[in-house]
Image: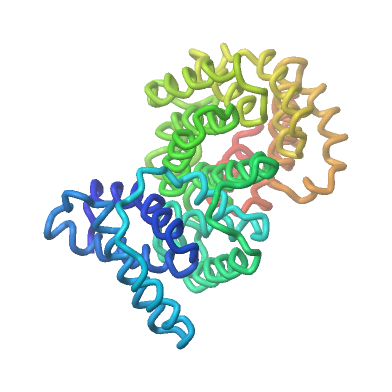
Length: 404
């Protein structure tokens, strides 16, 4: 069955609101999530044929509520008695106008869950993706995704989580977890960690959509704005990142006329409005770096001095091995490849980078800039051997072949 894109987009947008309504009424996340998924599937079947109802949210809430009742009636006698009391006492409620997206996201990113479980549950509950869609996007078997989602819901329940905004003293940590999950989803979509395709557009698009929803739910948070800006400024380059046959095109060689200028303008405007008033955070800094790249007319005109300064700040606020590798590239572009190689030797001592293909790829790039072709060629081949991404492997092997 092929679902029209307009209907599919509408269902994606309504999924978190419908789930929020049911969980707010009952407090039962696990059963409500299953019921909402079945309502979404029913809508995907019926709406293309019968038309979208006048009140699509109310339609989904009604169908999901009925399915939840059926699920409860299939459980124990105690559950049935509780349901009978609930049904007798409860009057139908109008659909709340409250946006529960932020509450739902923080529930899906509960600290009791592992990051991979947070990603799967977020894509299912907030994104409205089916288990099969998540499995295809993450390149894992469908039963594995189903297990992760089932266990995640059980752990949320066992942790005693309630459907309510986090307490004020927990809000920053919970929101940080949400931002991290959306960042992980986007990053995997932008540059797949394995497989035959460089990009998984369905993942990056979903992360961007959810980031917009989060921005609407938390309009005053600088890091939420920073993450959305980062996604916009990064995804703007997507049309130029691959050749028609799927091969990787590095940033310096991309046709900048193919970049999405509307996304660049939106991301830049969002960043310019946020930086002067919000506390500085890592997503804002990464977005600022992306903006410098995106606004340079050519690769040769990139302001590497500004990029290096931003990476120096980022290394203080949010140090990490990938931040350090990127900083070293900026060091080489400002102070010469030898300076970058000297710093890389120290960075290579970090156990987190041991055996990582990006370490070898950066070393190869800097050696090539320094004019050491044999060493650069060997490093490119080492990086190609280590990567799990077929497009990256082809690119690295081509660089090795071209380095003479």
